[in-house]
Length: 344
Ligand code: 26A
Image 1: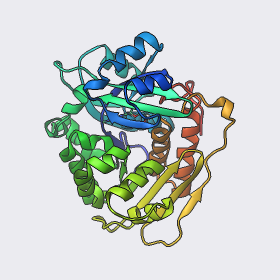
Image 2: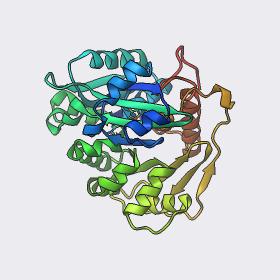
Image 3: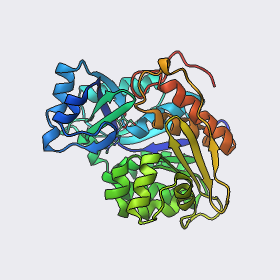
């Protein structure tokens, strides 16, 4: 890989503005939310966003899981390394996202829909848990037409590594498949995040269609369990689930698939296709008093890891980079990274 090329990492998913607050049991109960979850907003959640802003001193923070990952990868990589695609509206929320990505040095190619609001994610923090409730808005209107615009498609062709957030399976699976095929045909790494248990449960068909293209699949213990259950694997051991993911049929046989399962403060599990031994990597220790909130920790891990893949680092080193960035991010409010930059 040429070291001086621009935009080597291309990411796709749903740009969202997080409306994040420290909440309580009563708030979770009022909207029927679980303490630690990610869901799509239904009718009964409509009041949540205003409630958070009016009564819980909510902060507006740039979000969208893969956009957080993209900002994270750019944090570690040379300038102009990462480009991110997704759909937004033309409103004050989009302006906040533009400011955040500008500060992060992240290039975005948004599909702008002037008639629809930028997506919002209500985030309720209780202790080390976060409950997320998303109204996708304009993010739900990302389409192939945007991906195939010559100025966007040339970025796709130019990229050397692809990162897709699994949340995008609710939006435009054909765009995911285009990136997956582009990766396989050029023997370039395709990284997929499972994103949330509900993706493994309710978006199984498009998820499975993309599986042969995963060079790296990243998830947490909850997503791994949901995958195992929804696929009738009859296993609950995280290492065994990682192994099963790593050994699914694969399109590009020039790369062995790697499955990575994070488990909060417990060690990160890594299985490699065809290998018997499943490895464990302890997370970087942190004084609990320094943890601000863990929302976005998984996205930060994925960002650090993806940066390692882009730079051609070893698997061990890439995991280490992911854990390093996750440790930085949990000391910030929301899915953010410290500025001025800390160097790895
Ligand atoms: C389709 N859904 C539900 C989502 C999301 C999402 N990003 C994309 N699509 N639901 C929550 N998030 C984001 O996850 C980040 C934390 O990992 C939130 O915006 C938050 O920044």
